Picture (cartoon, rainbow, N blue to C red):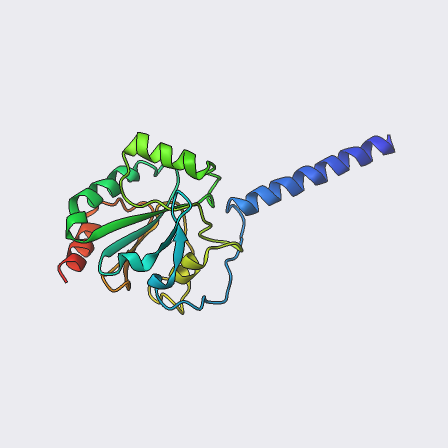
Length: 202
């Protein structure tokens, strides 16, 4: 009887540890991002891997108005890809682009490989704006770009942890973040369009 009880207790402990690890990984429990700011002082200083694994310096987008978005393929907000593509199509000839950064931080809603994500975006939403390789946007493994975007020393006024998929940062032609929109604010929202058009007019 005692042996059986010990076995049961071990199994319960192992299961509990697994649940805690999963909850930590998927953002259900606190997983603090690094406290120290990055050394970079601007978004143009970062080089990222695109969806095909090629290095892309964000300086490539200097002179453009840029929207940076953490995206996911299996989220209730995934249909926002349609709105992101719509504003990209409408304003790209005026110097606007969207940069999509797949991230699996929230409930494992971006589990696929880069190839699978690329195929999904192409077939489901005909995405034509630049997409990048998967990164972490919060937690101990947070990518330096998102530490830059969320840290109060490097992005004051628009700092704070990413709360969910499809959080949006808008940068002006000089790479300065001028607005941040919540995940539930759709890309075609009047406030987004107002900020975007004002930045393009400068």
